[in-house]
Image (cartoon, rainbow, N blue to C red; front, top):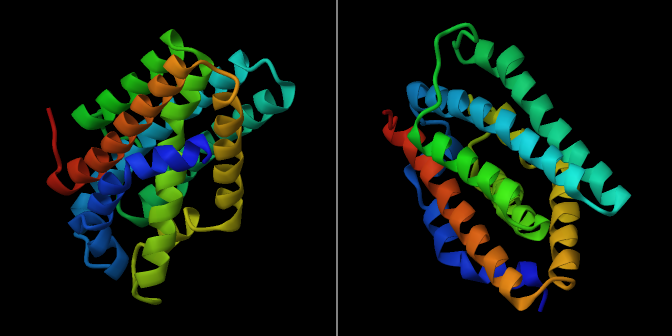
Length: 217
């Protein structure tokens, strides 16, 4: 069994909890209150900016040039989505990019977790820590598309971002790289990879829950 399959089995209960969240079900049927989605978008913009830099840092640490190029591209894509949030989605959903927004606790915790893992752990551990953001978003995006209300859902454009073929291709690349590097590392580091994968998956859950609760400092 591939490392990624074992890792996904370890987070199945977390993923099931994510699918059952009010944020996800209300996003799917279009009933999610606008203020909760606005909170989510503000924090997602902060997150993607830092996530993109973590991915680029992983690229810089990569010994394989193609892997480096792909992680640079992953980071670039995260920053492109962040830019689109500010230029398009913020306007569509009544947010002003110039407002005095600040990073809130769960987002702050998540990005600093990723940055510390990238800085102080081996590259394979950093790659595993970033994988849940790719993979869980893809799975959740597919789930939402499968149950989403039709044309009248105000969040349909956002949903399409994470359920398209281009995003799926990036997810598969990231999974393949993590599986490959897991075979080349030690048992100790494979366990570290599993632990950070689980932690990042928990943080994915808490990121959505924080938006629904509008958790602030």
